[in-house]
Image (cartoon, rainbow, N blue to C red; front, top):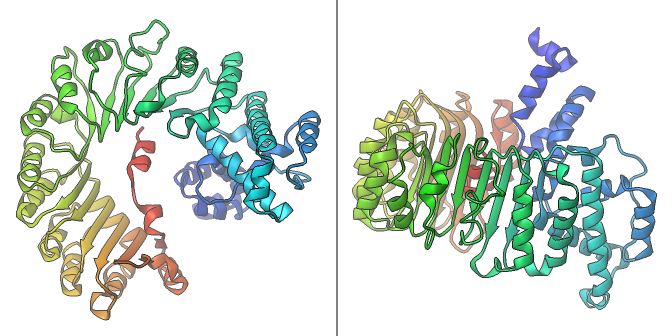
Amino acid sequence: MSCSKIFSGDLPELIYEIIKNFQNDYSTLHSCILVNRLWCRLAIPLLWENPFSITTGNYNFIEVYLYNLNDYLKTKINDYQIINYLLPSNTLFNYPSFIKYLNIYKIALSIERWLKANYKASNSVNLVTYNSILASVFEFEKLINMSLIKLFIENEVNLHTLEIGISAAFYKYYNVYVDISEIILQNPNFIHNIRNLSLSAENNHCKNALIKNYISQIIGLHQNLKRILFGHKSLSLYQSLVLSKEFNCSNTLNTIIFCRVSFNGINNLVNVFENLNVLESVHIIYCSTLDNFIQQITNLTKPLKLKSLFIRVNLPTDSLQSLLQKYGNYLENFKCGSYEFEVQQRHLELIMKYCINIKFLDLYGIESHITSKMFGLIENINQSLNYLSINVGNCQNELILQNLGQILPSKLEYLSLALRLIKVNDFEVFLKNSQDTFFKKFLISNLVREYSDDIDILPYIKEYIMKKKRVQYLAIKNTIRNRADVNLSNFKDEVKEFKLHNIIVLKYIDLFTDVNRFINEID
């Protein structure tokens, strides 16, 4: 009865809550559009929140945006005569009003790729001819960039995230950065309510005084900033941000993410963190010179809620111990990888000793010598563990497959096993031992020398996983050296068979949680 009400549209609020769970699952959202008008109306905004980041290689959505331009801009675009295209004669929705994520670089790159693809298709010319009119092309790209930003401003969109990145490609789009920054500053309401701000700069590309000034002014416009990300290799552009007079989010900022930054030369961290009154979580993702960070924050008078720590450098164990000793109770997400056996072992020992609330555990390059430590850690955090990823180094698979299944919690949001030369007998042992565990997402990557029947784990997956409906999403990949990966998702008949058991088979790369996906999912 309830199910029929959902599909008939009697419970729109409930339907929306269901569809929101597929926010980044674009294929499922496309399917939702086809159910009925209500589902379409609820799913379309989710599909158009961040179209510039969808990696399909299809940029025709830009033409849908252009349809919404006023007649003056359409005429001006046509005056360039660079491409011959037909804009949609009508659109069902006001698509520009749905955008929530703005990344200047991704917009400029998408427009460049759209233009190049359409120009080649409509004129059937090579890149030599295309390059001969490059000056006009640059002006045309600039016009499209500015037109889209103005379109978003006119629609009074409710932006959720602003991303500003300065990299090697920055100077290619320098004029775009300048023009867009100026129009944003002229229309402060456009970004006034942004909750998430991502700033990134590479070492040699963050010295432009004009852009630094624009960034500082843009930051000053924020009144309700809740999350900020510092990305890439240098904090020199932002080290005085929180202490500056322009920064007015001390009572709203609750999440800080440091991703691949260097803390070298950053000396005011204590003052920065002491100045933040509602900070709820700090995330350290693959940062360097962590010693300097640790030495400073251990002197804080208020607790630092360190929620994530991803390390792949050989951080001295005494530094890690001092960090975890003080803040380990807050740690929920841990990822480490080192090819030094003693470092691996000591890291796991420290996590087991000081961190009892780990939900997300990602272990890379696991060696045979430390499997007992790994199993001990998993048992220790069994009640909280929700995400587990194991990538073997020189470890023998049987040690993992014969022992892991019986210590897993009853439910796991995510289990990823990246193994080598899986033996079907060992894999069957794992499946039998873990048959009381339900996986929302289950991923297997098997590195093999060549494909043969004795490494075919699919019959066992069907017997112990598919028939018992123990998985919601599944991805299996065989990697054969010097050949393309073989994904289960490539086999249509197999995909259909799993679908009959309510299991969705996806490409490994689409289900795999990489660093960017992890960061995007941080609340």
